[in-house]
Amino acid sequence: MADNVTSLFRSNAAHSPSMAALARESDGAGLVDFCIPCNPYFPTPAMFEDMAARLRDIITYYPSSADTITAELCSLLRLPPQCVAMGNGSTELITWIDHLLVRESLAVPVPTFGRWTDQPMETGKRVDMFPLQESGGFALDLAQYAEFIRARGTKVAVICNPNNPDGGFLHKHAIVQFMDAMADLDLVVIDESFLEFADAEVEPSVVQEAMLRPNVIVLRSLGKNFGLHGIRFGYLVANPSLAGRIRSMLPKWNLNSFAEHVVFMLKEHGTEYQQSLHQVRRDRMDMSGQLSSLPGLTVYPSQGNFLFVRLPVGAEGTVVRDRMLTEHRLLVRECGNKIGSSSRFLRLVVRPQVDVRRLVSGLEQVLYGTPRRGAAVPEQATGTGYSSGTAAIDRLVSETNGAGTQGLAAQAVGAGPGAPGLPAAPAAGIGMPLPAAPSPVPVGAGGGMPMPAAASSGPPQMPQQAPHPVQPPPVPAPPVPQQPVPQQMPQQPVPQQIPQQMPQQTVRQPSQHPLAAPGPVPAPVPVPAPMPAVASYPPPQMPTGPTPPGVPARGGLTAAQVRGTDGLSQAPGTSWSGAQSWPEAAGMAPLS
Image 1 (cartoon, one colour):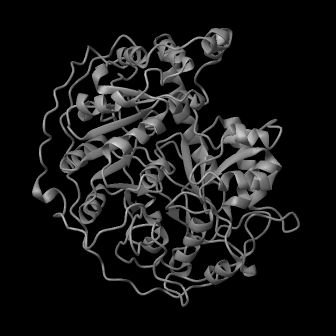
Image 2 (cartoon, rainbow, N blue to C red; image 1 turned 30 degrees about the vertical axis):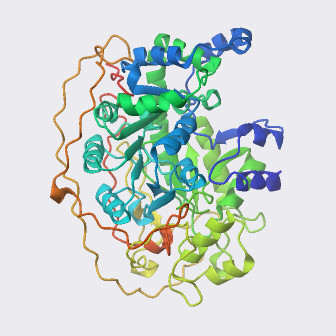
Image 3 (cartoon, rainbow, N blue to C red; image 1 turned 180 degrees about the vertical axis):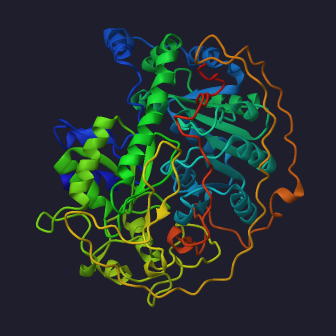
C-alpha cells in the first residue's frame, strides 16, 4: 500500500490526494487523519443525524438559487449581499479571481496554499514568489514583501492569514496598512480561510475594511471552519463592484443542496460552533506541547488548525509519511511537494488529545526506532541522512516531488551552499532573487538544530536553540561533526518597517446571536483608499527586464539559499487561557 500512497501524493502536485482515493488503496479501517485540516467538533453529532434523516430530500431535489443561499448567509453574518459572492469552494472563487482580475502577474509568499501559485501559472501569468525564511520561523515581513512587489512591478498581491502550511499570523492593523500601501495595485487578496481558528486578536478579520476599498478581496472558507470539505462552499467579501463581477460569472445553481441545508441550520447552532473553535484552540496548545517534547522536532507557532513541524536531521518526510500510514494507520501531510518547503517538513492537523497521543507514539517509533527495526532517521555517520540545508537538496525535492536521483542526492548531501559542482541558482520557477544570506551558525558555535521550548500555558514561542544535541532514547545519537564557521556576508540594509500604531477601534456591543454582528451594515459606497506616506515603504523600483509568462523569475533562489539571515519576529499572540474572547468571523460578533 505504501507505494500506491506515495504515487497518489506525487500525482497531486502541491495538494494532498482525496480521502476517497486513499480509501480505495486500503480498507480505511482505523485510519486517523492528520492531513486534511477539518474542524473535528463541528457539525455536532445531532446535526449529522439531522442531515442523515433528510438525506433523501437533500440529494433528490434542486437546491435554491445561489442568491437565496447567499442572502441567508449574509443575514447571519450581517453583511450586505451585494458585497458577497458564494462559490463552490474557495478554489472556484480563486479560479474566477485569476480569470477576471489578474492581468499579468501575481505575488505570493511561499510556501502557501498551492492554488495561489498553480492557478495563475496555468493561465500563463507571471507568479512572483516571495520565499518565507525558515530562520525566521516562516514569518511574513510585510515591509520586505512590499519592497519585493515594487521591485518586481507585480500587479496583484496575495496574503494568506493565517498562512497554510505554517500557520503564521499577521495582525489586523498591519494588514490594513499594507492594503492602503498597495492601493495602486490591480488587486490585493487577503485569504482568511483559516482565520476562525486564530486567537491572537479579538477581531482579526479585515472584511469591513475591504468593502470600503476599490481593490481588495477577502476570501473566507466555510468548509474548513465547519469541518465539511466535501460540501464545497466558501465566500468572498469585497466592494459591490468587485463582488458583482465575480458573482455575475457564477452559475445560478453553483451551490449544492448540502450547502443550502447547512447554511440554513447555522442560526440554530451558533453556540456549538463557537464552542468547537474554542476546543480546537485548546487542542492546538496541547498538541504543540506534546510534539515539542520529541527530540530534534521543531514546532512552529501557528494560529491555524494545524501545526507545521520540522523533522530531525536525517529524517525523510516521505518515509515518515508512508511508515506512519502503513504501521500506525496515521495519515500525515508531508510537504515536499509544496513550493518553498521540502520533505523535511510535515503539516499536522490539530485533533483531540486521544488522537495526538497516538500520533506522538507513532512518531517516536518511526523516528527513533532501533537499527534492527529501521528508523526514519539514520545514523549520520552513514551519510544517507536527508537534509534540506542546501540549495541542491531543495531543488531536488522541488523537481522530483521527493523522488530524487542517486547522483544528485549523493552530490548534495553534506555540501553547503556554494559547494563545488553546485549551481548558484535553480531552474526558473523555484523562487525569487533575493540578497545572498550567511549560512547558519555551526553546531559547535552554539547553533545546530533549533529545539522548541517546553510547553507552557502561555502563547506558542519561537523555537529556541539547544546548546547541546538531545539524545533520543533508546538509541544514542552520534556526535554531530563540527563545521567551519562561514564567513559573514555584509549586512543588508533593513527596510523601514510598517508603523505599529494600532488604529482606533469602534466599541461594539454584544449581539443576540453568536454568529451575528450588531445591527445591519448598510451597503458601503466604494471610495478611493488613502495613499500611504512616502516613508512607509521603499520607493518603487522597476524590474530589470521582462519575465516570460508563466515563469516566476529568472535565476531565482531557493528558500535554502536565503536561510540563515536575520530572523523575522513572529507576531505575538495571546494564549487561549488568557484570551477573553476569540476573533469573530466576517462581521460576526464575539461570544459574550
